[in-house]
Length: 334
Image 1 (cartoon, one colour):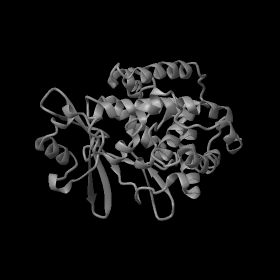
Image 2: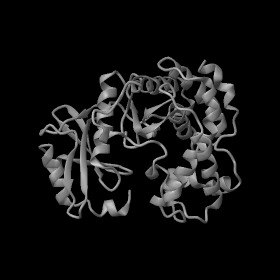
Image 3: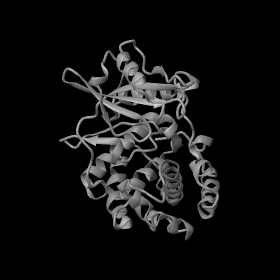
């Protein structure tokens, strides 16, 4: 989380947010949040999540667009956490931070279950993972925001291109590869069947699995318009990240994942050939985000430290994120 957001979060902001949902501050139990402040609360036996984002990162219209899309997905049978209205009937509650900005409060039903384990090497989980993503891709094709101002960004809007914003120019190899991959991706065709609004961060930290193996997705803060194949590549990116043998993990994960996806949505297998470019884009953007959020010379976050171990050397050497022939997985989408 950006320090300029963290320092604006005061007890007054918390008390105001709680009051908007007829709660006291002590009713809110803080959870880990990377980009927003996240709290759990209960009403009777029902459990909910309260998220406080800041207008520095997202405008109120972008938050409304996110929550409206989640409501649409939930209403069309996609496995997403249901947004809930405040007692005043608002999807987004706006709370002034006293410094010219606003905290934006949204509430959701808590996803049942808990975090997944061993995603890449659990074929049953991978198949259901693919099916749920496929359902989202299928139903989003008919979605349009009710207000054009709520339209979510496209993948290449300025605020999405993190290497340009946060990576120092001394990381010349990363900047060079970023320009190359952007040129390649910009040339790809777009159509209703290949490009739309997607989660764009659907990793294992953003869904829970219940005792019956059902998945429920949450945290749609990064949702944006991009290729469906990019959304799939991002899932793969995180499924194998920090695995001792990521290529082997990918070979285990992709067949059931793609077969599950095919049950709900169709995608031309030729799009698998673009996975190396989408994976490189995510690798470089995450590299830049870590430079933004951490002291890269003193990393104390275990996952981030593992991801960054040898990452600069790999990028400088021009190595792909995964050394695989993705065409070999075409039968699982056909």
